[in-house]
Figure 1: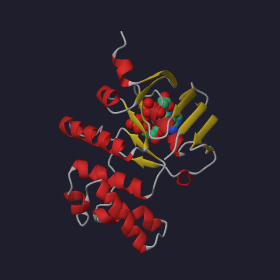
Figure 2 (figure 1 turned 120 degrees about the horizontal axis):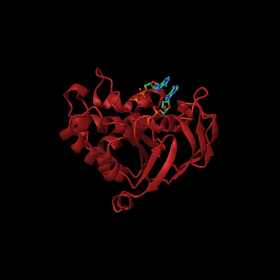
Figure 3 (figure 1 turned 135 degrees about the vertical axis):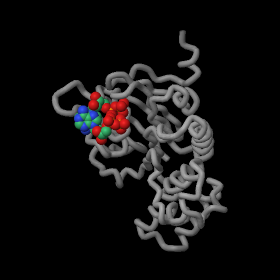
Figure 4 (figure 1 turned 30 degrees about the vertical axis):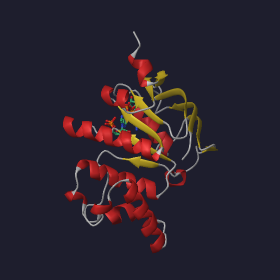
Length: 226
Ligand code: ADP
Ligand code: ADP
């Protein structure tokens, strides 16, 4: 787990108005931070700069006390959870969770130990031999998070993970993500344009507008504003 510090982050595509314009934001170890704002305000660009999928034009990105500007995504040890969870349909739950460990050639007994531990925490033990197609949306989300846990990632990053779901499932998943994040206590950055998600999920909400931070506050502080 790690803190994420952004210092005067700028992202300039071409010569237009900067997509991200001098953003400074400290996210504490274990904190759940929401990035919210209208389409085009720079949320995804900021998230992609944290993960390393996008170069930073200027400023410093510091993760766990270490400057990561020049580190490739795989060297940052973060875990991005995608909209569709990016599970492999032909693999079982066990193999999906184990996948990052297979890539890093972790010995079999260590793989077994870590997958068992993760599936315990995530209440997936009874489903380890199933394929993703036979899981509920919530269970798929947990498998995606299981992958992040076995890798012992420093932080979770979500980019609008619920935007393709119907209202009922979205409500369930919101509860599930909030519960898991508290249980794991892992630093989380969550991008959304949904007001309900912004007001219910996080410890703090960072409101972006035209590439700049308009406000950073707890949901309660935002709610009580005139
Ligand atoms: P959001 O996620 O809040 O919808 P984005 O981060 O996707 O916003 O985009 C912020 C701004 O940067 C927008 O004006 C968008 O058009 C622009 N932008 C995003 N990606 C690129 C790109 N690859 N090249 C040029 N402009 C981009
Ligand atoms: P979303 O915000 O739903 O992810 P977008 O339409 O903003 O989708 O972006 C889709 C892709 O197009 C992204 O990879 C983004 O970087 C890129 N993109 C967005 N705006 C621009 C732009 N103005 N010029 C070039 N690429 C862009």
